[in-house]
Image 1 (cartoon, rainbow, N blue to C red):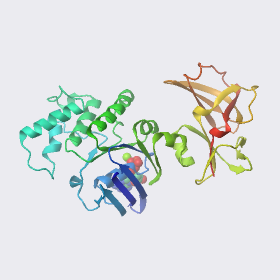
Image 2: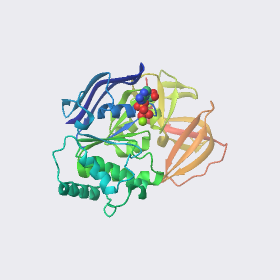
Image 3: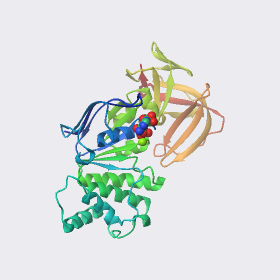
Image 4: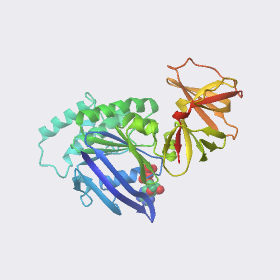
Length: 356
Ligand code: ADP
Ligand code: MG
C-alpha cells in the first residue's frame, strides 16, 4: 500500500508555478527516485511534503491521513539535506543524538536509551569506531552517513533526500548508491531520493518518478522507463535516445534525415517524434547490405569514448546533428572507426519508439 499520496498538488512562487498539479503514490518500504532537470520543482516538492512549504492546492496523504496542516516535526518524515547540515562543533555521536534529543513528539528518553539507539544507528550506517570523531575530521561519504543516521534515529516513516550524492566525488557517489540502498533495506522505510542524474535515478529507484516542469511526466520501474519512455521529452531527458522530430506519413516517419520505415512501438503523447536507443544501433561499413526489417541512415564518424563496459561513438548526420551509438563490449570486440569517414547506422524497425 501507499505510504504517501499526492493529489493535484500545486505551488506557485509570485504567480509562477513550480508544481503544476502533482499526482503520485509512493509504496511502503521502497526506494523511489525523483528525477528532473534543474528548476523542475524537485526541491519544492520535497519541501511541500516535509511541511516546510505550504501547497497552494491539492492533497497530501501520509499513510492515508491528510497532513496538510501538520507541522513538519510531527509528520514522521525525515529530511536529508544536500550539504548534510551537520553541527561542526559536535562529534559524530553527538550529531546523531541531536536528532533524538530534539524530537518534539518524543516521550522523555533517558540517556542510556539514547546512547543505545545512537550506537545501533552508527553500526547500521557503518560508522562504528568513529563515534567520538569531530564531524570536521571525517570524509564526505562519512558526513553523508552521519546526516542519514541523524534522520533515521528518529524512526521516520519516510525519508526525503535532496540530491544526497551531489556533494560527493564521482567515485564515492557510485559506491554510496549501493550503500544507500542497503541502509534503506535494513530500516525498511521508504526513501524518496531527488536527483538530476538519470543514471543515478535508474540505478537506485525501485520506482522512478520523472518530474518535468512541475508535473510527473512518468512513474514506472527503471526497466520500463528505459525501454518505454512516456513521451519524447522523457526520452530526451534519459539521455540514451537519438530523437528525430517530424511526422508519420504512411508507413514511414519523415525526419530531417529522410524517411525512417516504421514498425516500432507507437505511443500517443504530444509532439510527434521518432526515437532510437543508443545501444540498439549497429555501425556498419557504408557498402554493407541492409535487411528488410532494418532502418538505415548514413553519417560521418567523429569520435569514440570508453565508459566502463561500453563504447560511445559519435557521428554527425547530414543535417549537422550528433547521433550517438553505444556498443557494449560484451557484445562486440572494440572496433576502430576512421575519423570523418562515412558509415551506415542500422537498427531494427521494431526497436524504434514512435510518438504520435
Ligand atoms: P529543482 O530542485 O528541481 O532545481 P526547485 O524546486 O528548486 O527546482 O525550483 C522550481 C522553481 O521554483 C524554479 O523556477 C525556482 O526558481 C522556483 N522557486 C523555488 N523556490 C522558490 C522560492 N522560495 N521563491 C521563489 N521561487 C522559488
Ligand atoms: Mg533542488
